[in-house]
Length: 113
Length: 118
Image (cartoon, rainbow over all chains, first blue to last red; front, side):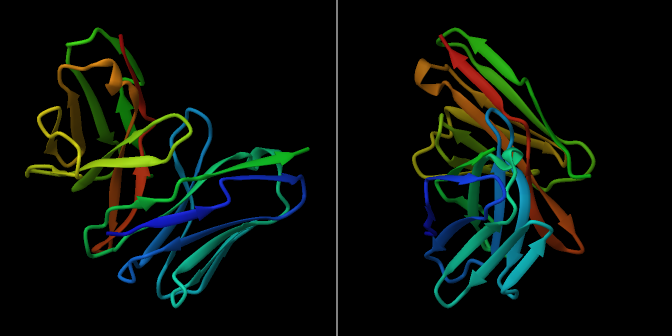
């Protein structure tokens, strides 16, 4: 089955700096890659997603890149703000298949003012 | 749009009792809902996939007689933790998939239920 590895497990940056979180997946059939942000005690919130027919997607300060050949995808947050502090999870699934999301172990991002 | 609710948000029960958790898609119909369990500072672990009108599909290692799932309508799935024990204490989260134009879009999560078994 699918296996998703996520790095780093913790990331601390200064406000205004950029943050990058990387994930790799094992199943070449995976074609959908969402990123979720989870604040303490809250539900995971979708922040951006990308499908395998696209190499990059951007939404304001957030961008995701996908390298299908290498089977890895990354989340980029620019101009970080303290409210970006949270745990971020990457995930992979096969749309049209089982559609189960397999999650990475998460990255705790801390943005220091 | 794409709002998922969960009830209760928090429950404390005695060991040996059963607890039912409801997951509702408020503004869309969800043919598929998922149930996850999350331990503190850990990732989400898929327990089962719930399909409306059919039996749930459980992940390996999840006891189907322990965690009963019912998906009676396109907007409601329930998870019942039977004969709960302290080791069942956890954060349980459901999600529902929104279908758009024949394609299933992403999963939207409920707010979670924190279960504490004494």
